[in-house]
Length: 85
Image 1 (spheres, helix red, strand yellow):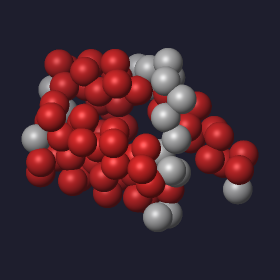
Image 2 (cartoon, one colour):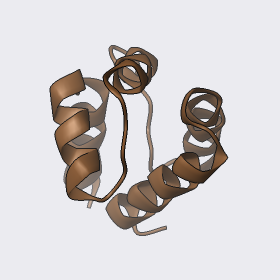
Image 3 (cartoon, one colour):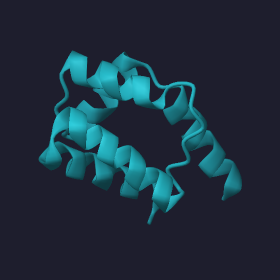
């Protein structure tokens, strides 16, 4: 399971704006280019572990400031689908 977690975290920490827009669209979450760029800046080059509940919640608070409460909740559901918790 650790390998799976490492792969997902590495991908999130290196995601591009285009990849984030594509993934969010596939999951039914609408993001503007500007919002996606801001979220990528939060993620890129950092060692955020979305499997760690406190790190995930801290990230979601920052994402909520960018996209608002409703879409942050949608993104939280995406994280739950990836992490299983």
